[in-house]
Length: 78
Image 1 (spheres, rainbow, N blue to C red):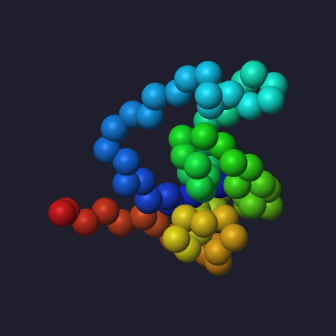
Image 2: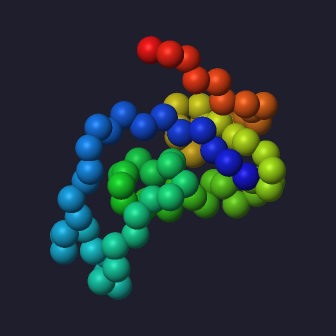
């Protein structure tokens, strides 16, 4: 499975000890749906039933919003 996610950040996020969870680990979002990017907030649970080989778009990049399959991602020159 693949996911189209809109990113608006223009630079890195610095992580430190305050980002650690109760288990002294820092979890970085890889699904693109977290509301606390770059940290994971568990939003990846919404992707559990995505099928391999299918590309998805979550409306407004929100895991609670409508998910639809998309054929391709088309980039437009800005």
